[in-house]
Image (spheres, rainbow over the protein chains, first blue to last red):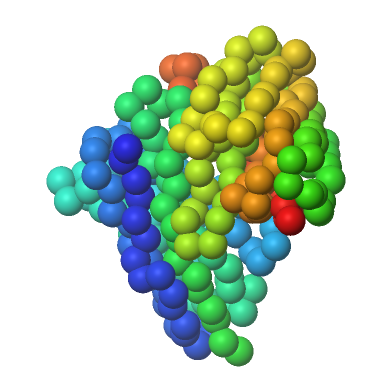
Length: 111
Length: 116
């Protein structure tokens, strides 16, 4: 089955720095989503990018999608301690019915 | 709106016991799903439903049953618990898009299950 694989597995940065995490997938998609999970909580939807889009912004978040390389990146600018969480990408299946999640990137933002 | 609620928050079972994890949503979403999350493996889909009365298997359905008698509720049943089912279970719901696909998912807070 197709799957998003995030890279790196873990990332530690200082507050104020930018954080970039990447997601690669195997087969064609309709859309790709990024979610955040704080420790011990459920996942929260951050942003969705469709296969015909190349870039989307939401506040301090910037997501890019390169369908030729089957990859996406999530950039968090001016990071804050509150951004400490795990970040997951999710790619849809060919029928648009379900999503497959990668193992996630654990981001630590140090004050 | 409460969103997606799950009960219980934490449960300890002995091998062979059965139990039901409850999930409810008050957003009138057609799609609902159950995932399990294990360390280093992301979320894996157990079962899903595209509407009341319709359910289907996901990636890891063995040992679990579901039913969807109403739009709001989507319980997950463990038939005979095994230590391999120790995990965190998440329920999610999403609205049906005009194209019939599923997009943004809304997750519950999760149920932590320990099977001894």
